[in-house]
Image (cartoon, rainbow, N blue to C red; front, top):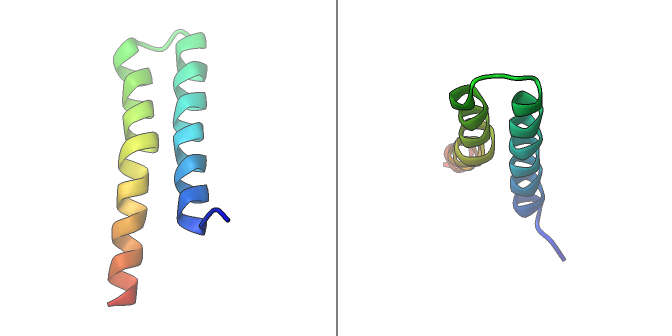
Length: 57
C-alpha cells in the first residue's frame, strides 16, 4: 500500500510538471516555468515534510 506521504509528494510533483507545461504553453519566460517546476515539485515536498516533522516534535 502506498503511504500518504508518497501520495502527497507525487501530487506535488505532478502539479509542478503541469504548472511547468502550462507556463511554457502560455509563453512565460523559461525562468518562470522552471521556477514553478522547482518550487512546487521540488521545494514543496521538502517544506511539507519539515512542517510535519516539527508538528510531531
